[in-house]
Length: 256
Image (spheres, rainbow, N blue to C red):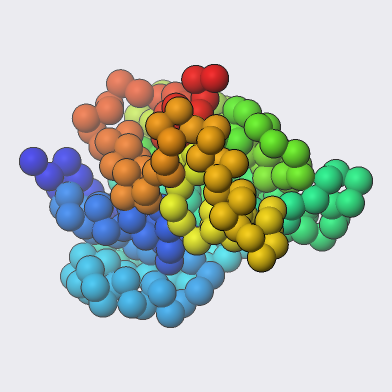
């Protein structure tokens, strides 16, 4: 059964990782998708792979109000609206103690992960209110509920903020048929996690990977496709009673 048949979805951070996996799965499940990201080349390649009748893209900086407005206008012009919004764009920052953390990097992480999600919610909820409802999923991180390690203050702070935004948006959206939820991936085999491994163990990323694997009850990273399956369920009508919920996709990490 195609659980997203005839749905129209906007996916940010669609050029790689979990965002890309969501785009591929959503089209497979019957949706039409508008893909957003800063890098145009991977979005173009993905649209070619998915088919231009099912997918389109718009180069987008989620920290800019005008880019978010253009994104939702483009979905209306291309496909007729927006039923689902997946906020998957994210920035990991650098591995530094708070006392050494670069202020400009902190600001960039907060801009993408918090301001970007806020602006996406702002435009998604206005669009969906007129449309009569919709579903929003924020792709956050297990760092949204657990600090776990040191040297990642900006990332942890931003991910906690995303959960707070979700809960507020869920209360504001519910009377209008807009469901807002968050999915918290744990260590997942993506470009971002490989960058984190390298930043924490320069020249020897396998050390960080070994440390992370040792912390996981399932003793393996998730895949982007596995996380996308959870996001697709939460976004779909099969999860129609869920709002304001936190769904972990973390290999059991949050259980400890």
